[in-house]
Picture 1 (tube, one colour):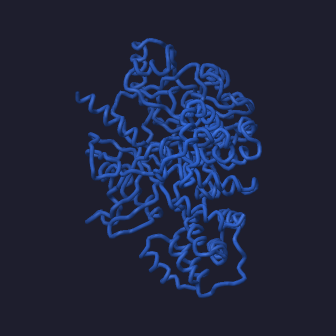
Picture 2 (cartoon, rainbow, N blue to C red; picture 1 turned 45 degrees about the vertical axis):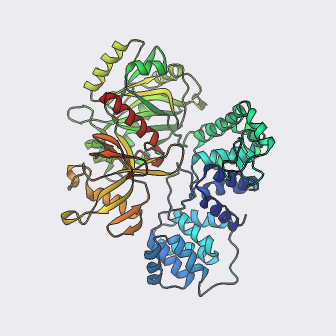
Picture 3 (cartoon, rainbow, N blue to C red; picture 1 turned 180 degrees about the vertical axis):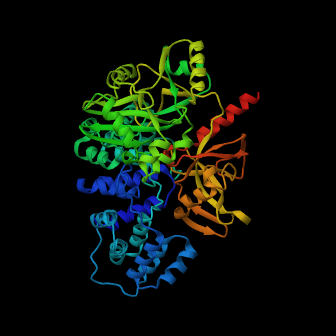
Length: 615
């Protein structure tokens, strides 16, 4: 496939903010995409060259792209930087300068998707002396062969700034539209005026013109048809939850249909998105959701650790699907010595404890272990962890996510031999009485945990979803996990730091981020005192995409947990809300990604909840 064809799709996706339009454009493109090209196309549409769980990154800095544009166009680096300062977008700079390059090569080969994909993947393989120059040459090779618009998207992909708004929901729906048209045709119809695929109704959701009689008639059948459509969406979602790779899912759907999607299996060694919990405010509400009796477990203040084993090989992954096996050789040994099975995937929480008192400590005390790559043995002594196992997804090569929770718990209790402050089965009781839950809650808090988890005994494991099978009960106003989308350089003694941060939540079901406030309190001026301005500045500096005086815009990769006194209605921010007296509690970037931050629906729920509390 020609890369220009994919760039045409990029242009279509970039031209609209409407979810249905994006889904239509992508589905039409997938229909004509050959099976061998599907996986690269799906990854490139996400601005990636590796699946989300693969820790390899292109790792290309802005200045290297500036140099590649210089080599490919013949324009001096200083001139490239001048144009970059004007636009704030190296992709547009590449497009402008490549389009008018002085050293155009008439013999340049036309770019293919395969060529672009392979060159970008090669960037991760180059290491050692001279690797920077070799990377620059690989990028310059692509830019030299690119047409102007192709250069724009090559540069943006390399820098992780594709910005075409194709989230998981759009990818999932596009796969359904492309490969299961019979399930879609009664739920969505084609408008005779704008020819877009839209829901059946009196008028077109895209152009506003009246739909034809057939489309109106289809609306009467929509409820029955939607059931079949939702089954297809569920199959696609389940396949994705088990693989974390829409490329694999799309290829299965194209080549093997619905039956093929049903054959997708968990693979030991490939991380799976963990099941997430909903929050409840009362024990009564919890029982209403999970039923009686329910299992109550300690809610540990640590970080999720997904433990995979196949024979002698062990992998450890965080909630963000990052491979941290090398950072936790102690946990690897615990698994080898105290878990009786040759093949499994365990869901657990790694909790830090004080090596002297043996008491649990807050997550912030041990968060640095996730990113520590040196002095590991010393770190183990200073920041030890206990692994609390609470669920299992795969046992001796068999997928067990569909088995009821009580059965999965029985498997865990058989295979994990408790070794205190090393690896244990999470502490739990089964009860149907509110008073026993309250008593267990007090015990959990006294032990240094955050509260309780309540679980539905007959529920399956639902990877990657917040469902009513698992609830968290903490009895406190809920903090928010928010992304930094912009920051301001400080003044006076803080002038060397980005010290004020604009925060955003997610628009529920969409990729859009909605600003909700600005925070500058809760951080320290010295690293030894806790999360510092210097540390956050260091994280944000390579993520800067635009600069406007003291204000900088950044890629939203730094996640902060934020407390606040109150949520208020506000016309100032796009979310429609603002946080009163927000303060930073901790950095969550090591365990959470942009898809894990709170949504606008969470904010609305908390806003309503606080109003009830006030009476």
